[in-house]
Length: 112
Image 1 (spheres, helix red, strand yellow):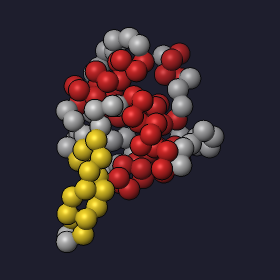
Image 2 (cartoon, rainbow, N blue to C red):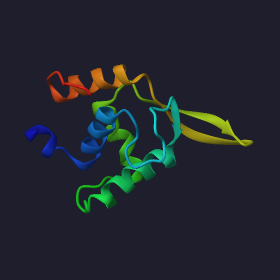
Image 3 (cartoon, one colour):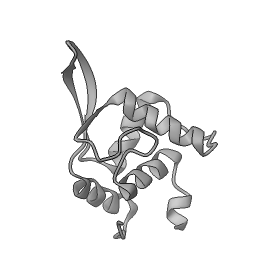
Image 4 (cartoon, rainbow, N blue to C red):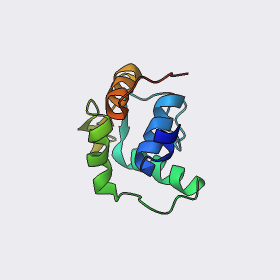
């Protein structure tokens, strides 16, 4: 609990996403295989706004770099959506990302 409380806001959000099995702050109710980068970032921004977090919030460009530390299996790609190419995050299975997180945090977690 103490480690989680001292994490940067992005990492707190990511830990909550992994715990709840969904992108916290988004309208999605299940773990997606892919999501547009803007929707992903909007979920994080909504999370910080809902919790009144004002400091240590990374800029949009820095979010991907910060996630690489705790989720190296997360990939970025481009897909065609409605005739346009869009950047998306390709999210592996939740068990893979939870294992990434455990390596990042340095201990095993109990996932609900």
